[in-house]
Amino acid sequence: MLLAILFPFISFMMRGKFIIGLVCLFLQCTLIGWLPAAIWAVSSYNKEITEKRTDKILEAIKNNKQ
Image 1 (spheres, rainbow, N blue to C red):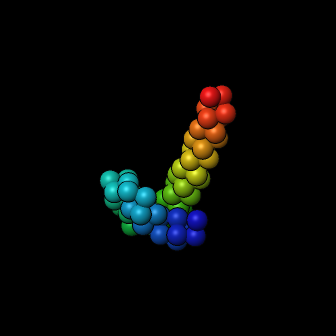
Image 2: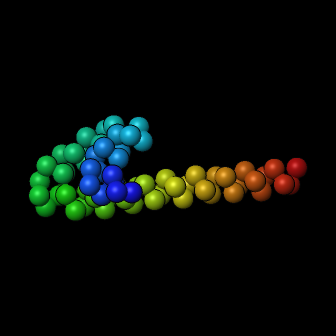
Image 3: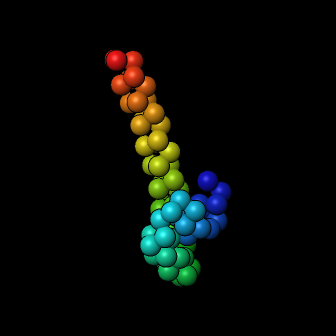
């Protein structure tokens, strides 16, 4: 989470989203764009965690029905 705030483009790159990381880096190059880039990276990180948790729950439900 701290990495997503301080270095948003690296957060995207580490998760395999290279093109989005480059767009984020371009946005970060401006002083005004740093805050939106950090918010975007944190939001994306939280969404990814939520999706993984949801997939795990759905898989557990699917396995219980069988």
